[in-house]
Image 1 (cartoon, rainbow, N blue to C red):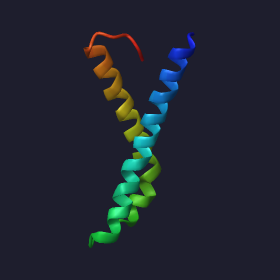
Image 2 (image 1 turned 90 degrees about the vertical axis):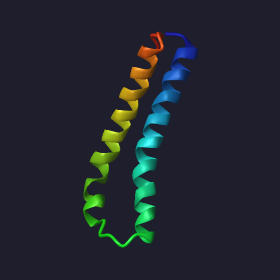
Image 3 (image 1 turned 45 degrees about the vertical axis):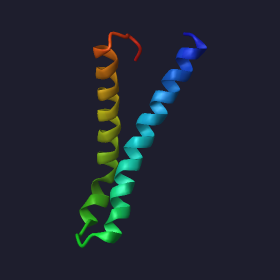
Image 4 (image 1 turned 90 degrees about the horizontal axis):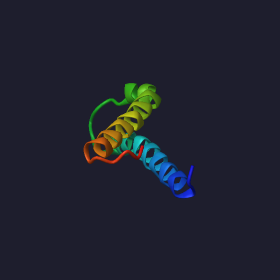
Length: 72
């Protein structure tokens, strides 16, 4: 495994995890400005975060495969 490939994989993992956590946190911050009960949201936050990270990974891989590259 080449060092460049290692850095690309680490960067990809970072972006996926970062966005998977950032999106639910933004929604939680919006809770202060909306008149809605978000108590159930906090219960499912870990599940939603994991699902978002997996979805970002799937979309990323689909884009790479559609563009003809075989990087993962």
